[in-house]
Image (cartoon, rainbow, N blue to C red; front, side, top):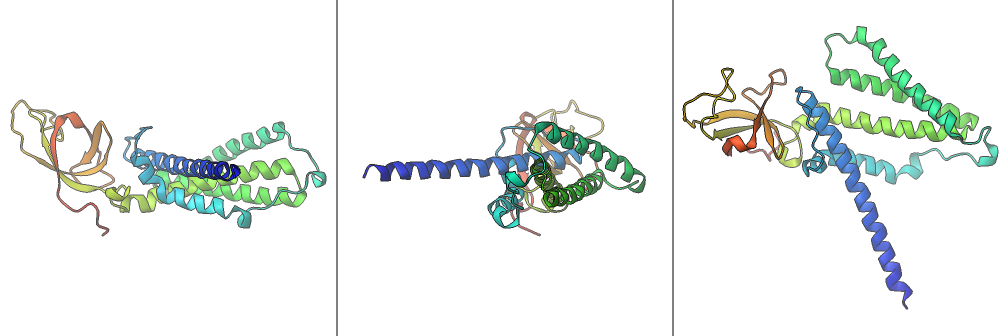
Length: 261
């Protein structure tokens, strides 16, 4: 009779552990998405402890979780140890990882002449895609020839590259279209009331000496616990202004930032 409560505790602990792993995956995905998104405006945000990371990363994390749960269907099984030509060894694994870095640099420099005028994000996506494709071919060859180290290393690299590629594609094409209330990065039009005399922070002339607190209508791109990233125009080509929160008296949302349109 005493084993049933203990079994329930073990199952509950296992469930909590799995939920923590999924939450960590969502958080890591969101951290990467926000970093890539803000780096697009030359203001990369690196904020470790922020709930926004989970909201920003849930689409990427959800897809990665579904892929993990279906791994028994899509993953190639490892060959039996007795049939392997080589036993797993770390030297071969490190050599493969080192070759990945060389391949990454080679692909990057090869595509540069053909990508003049294209965005940095598109170059990153093409580079990661080419490297992932090469690893898929190598993984197939390793499985065919039953190299146990090659299979495990190439499979791990393909999984990591697929995760980064998924995050990059989501950041470029989907994240900027999702409202901020849903964890997205679509700019929202707001009206800022500054504490005097800081209302001219958005002007090229800098702060003024008058104490007029007239509001400024701007587009809010991102906000942290310490500052906001705003612009007077909704354009990815316009520079963003970083404004500390302690210089803002009030913020008014001028449009619904929870509606998709």
